[in-house]
Every structure is written in C-alpha cells, then in structure tokens.
Length: 359
Ligand code: IPM
Ligand code: MG
Image 1 (cartoon, rainbow, N blue to C red):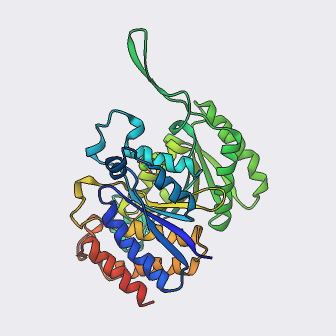
Image 2 (image 1 turned 90 degrees about the vertical axis):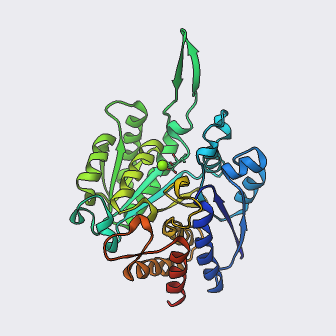
Image 3 (image 1 turned 60 degrees about the vertical axis):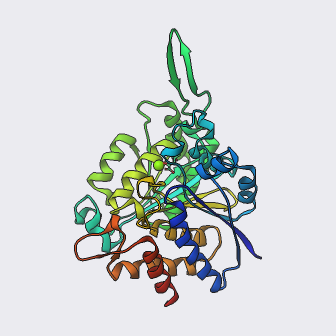
C-alpha cells in the first residue's frame, strides 16, 4: 500500500536542509519505497501566508501522512508576534499535540570521525550512543492553568507541571522496550526531591520495572543528570524523562556528539505515525547561505524509514552513506576540523546521495 509522506520545510535553514533530505527520499523511492510525497506550510511561513502557524490544510495533510519530515520553525521575524498562540513554535507544538506524538526519541551518537568536533575530550565521547526518550505532549509545556496575570498590583507568570499515571506509563513503556533492544539500561530522570509530579513519575517507572526484568532501571535527579552527561556520558544507555527536562538534556547530549547539526529525532504516536526532524532549530543567522548541515535531516529520513515505514534496510543504507561521506573527510562548517574539507549544504547532499546510490 502506498504510504503518504508530508514534508514541512518550515523556516530559516529548514527549506535548504529538507531539500537535501528529499533527494535521499526520492532515491529511496527509486529503490522501491512505495510512498507519495507532499509538501506543506508550518511555522512562520505558514503565519505569513495564512495568519496561522498551523493552518487547517497542513493539519489535515499531517493526519493523512504516515511520516512527516520537518525542517525547523521560527526566527526573529516572528519573535515579536504578540499573540503567543500565533508564534511559529506553536505550529510545532500544535502538530505534536494534535497527532498525539508523545514519544520523542533523540539519539545522541558520536560518529568516530567527529569525536574531535566535540567540546569534550575524545575519550569521553568516542563511541557514545545514548537514546533520550522525551515525553512530548504533556508536562509543563501543556499543563493548565497557565498564563500571565495581574495579582496584587504586579504581573505574575505561571505554568503547571502535570503528568497523569497513564501519560507516564505509556512513555515508560516506550523507553523500557527500547532499552530491551539496546544496552538494557534505563535511567529515569526526575526531580522527585522537590516536585510531586515527578514523585509520581518515579513511582510509575518503578511499578513498570518488574515487567521488564532484563532492563536495569535507575533514577537520577535532573541536575545531577545534566552534570553526569558532561562528566561521564557513556554511563547512559536509554534516558527517559518529561517534556521540559528532555528538551534541555537533549541539547546538552547533542553537543557531546560534536554538533547539534548531526542529530535526528522521531516523535511517535500510539499507531506508529511519526514526525521526524533534526534536533537543531531554524538557525536564522545562517539561513539562505547554503552552509547548514543537512545530515541531521537526512538521518531523520533514516529514522522515518525505520520507525514508521518498516524499511530498516534502506534506513541502514542511508546511515552507511553518511558514514562514508564523513570517512571521505567532507564536513559542513559546523563539524569542520583540521584536515577536513568544508562543503556546502548542497555539496553534502550530493555526496550522501552519491554514496547511497553506490551501495
Ligand atoms: C525542541 C525545540 C522545541 C521544544 C521548541 C522549538 C518549541 O526546542 O524540539 O527541542 O522546546 O520542544
Ligand atoms: Mg529544544
């Protein structure tokens, strides 16, 4: 059956990097991947065209798609929109919420070729392979009540950190199951010494643990987890945490690998429908210059093939092609180091495509 894929280039460097990833996707089609590809608007560009960061038409296309490939949204041009609900980021958050994409997988893998590009010493990061599982549709990002209001003559801003048992359980199961397929170690990150919502989080993780006897479950407070990630990152296998802690820790983990420009991500719902996007943002400072790193987006296509389209062999070929190109010494500016050749976004796309086609 032909499956639908929706490409949402978004803002900033989004169109440049998704253009390269789309070429790889087309090459997969040529190899027999049975998909139909559409494009749509999301974020600032959608706001400019329709006055909404998530137009109804995009949402409709997204619902019909098995996989969504997203570039990035946002930029200074839209930072002054007064109504927060119209900001580009709300387009992204709305799509996550509307499609129920609660399970966010953010792998942090240090390619051996890039260990020098990390800000940490080579021996700390070489061979690193962590999977951060971030809850994506709950927690403080969506909790009610929220707002800014006048109280006793001054303005007060407030948000609500809330998780139900069922929300914790379903993300917990995703993490335990992934741990079973990997190194069988799961670290649940919380702030159970202070926050009730995460006391419950810890309790639910403990309750699930006996169902996964082959997985070793541990707990860590988020402040310590941040420290341990930069002190001895290889102690982690799978990390599971809530929306906000996962947002922060996944950026830190990204830098361990040399560049946030390398990290793909998957956001899945219960039916395996998924949105795939690089972990980095829209990088407006380098947009339109053909210098951004397209590899995280290309690797996001690989994740889509693996998690939503049941095409693990093609996924592995894309990953192999990326490895080959790095072996050849090609680097975009963000991952360049001594002795490598700096290439543009499109040259990187050319090289990965050639390596893929040669496999
Ligand atoms: C991310 C981003 C988003 C988030 C922003 C753009 C809303 O930082 O995907 O990590 O905070 O979830
Ligand atoms: Mg983030």
